[in-house]
Length: 185
Image (tube, rainbow, N blue to C red; front, side, top):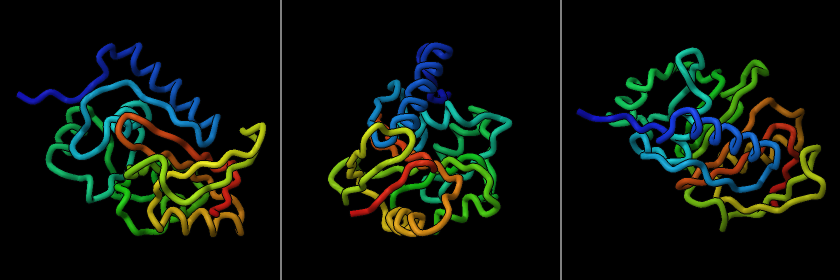
């Protein structure tokens, strides 16, 4: 018998994870450590915690095929997650090696949260952040895939799309909500 990963204290840990995700979204670029739990398939513990917090039977999500292994699919099925092939979905989970346009996750200006597994939350190109959530500009340097850097550069020259980005690595995450101004240095 295989047990699906879950929070140790279902109610308390899920509430704590939700508050930490909200903290990361309300403070763009800040790193938060999510409650420890076994990872689903090849996903990190942080990505698993984000999925367990944001996805349920009523909230469809899209899964990158490189993360879609047998163990991941079994865990998602036991959890009751609503996986879809439609990329225009409220939540998407991508592996850091993907190379597709981020914009296709919100083609009709619908709100989407794109969770991206990255190799590290530091050591990449510097991003300068500003916006209504920040009292003063902030610099971060997560190691991002070229598709995300391309999206961030192009987004600066067009109207903001309602795509919130969450970067996960190990048990940590950081977020860039769609209202954050990002300059890739």
